[in-house]
Image (cartoon, rainbow, N blue to C red):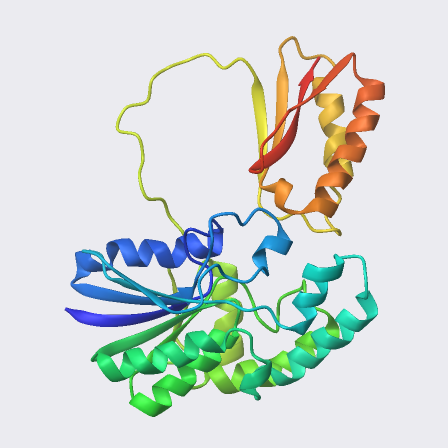
Length: 317
């Protein structure tokens, strides 16, 4: 079997969309006579908010898991100085210092290993390349520093590498203008050495083809299992679900205002659920603040008592 080295920062048990993508490769590459070797960060099972995301790993050395699907190497994580400020003093303290440190890491982490908190992935990848006959390297971003690791490994070992984009890098509209300027040249330099590019959608494919003048293939996000039988049943609620990140510039208030008009004359219960929003405290509070308006307007509003997976409301018209 050909061995494929996969560099993936997000990976189960961290339950993110970014982690499920390389996990699907790990599960199904064997069906195509490929043996995946994944190198990822060690994630503990309690990642429930952004602070947990930067908490040090509970292990101090690399672990290795072998199965019929392939091999997973998990490297320990240690937060950098900026993240240590958050862990010690909270997210509302020393914001100016943390902004300076963020800029410093943007400027240095690609060039000075000491300031790269993810460098253990590269160090372990070098060892793996020396131990195994690797046929191809796949780096899935972000973080896009994994592209730098794959490019370096490819030059050292003469093994081709593939750049997998889950989102844009320098073209990502969530980045500041300064970040886009800093990353543009770096992205062009690194991706130039890739054999090809893979991504998740046609719009991103077209953007990457224009930018890099290189073959870009779409590998869609899919699903693992589906029900073989679907039973008819009556739902107690009409449910609208929102899944994914809610950004500050997305006017959820406009949707919620329209949602209230929708339920005014309903003769059955209606439910709206924001899956995953518990992870983002600022956006969670933004939604809950609008719930106060709905409480005032509607005849009955019952907030859903939720766990760490999601927040939402029951609204009975």
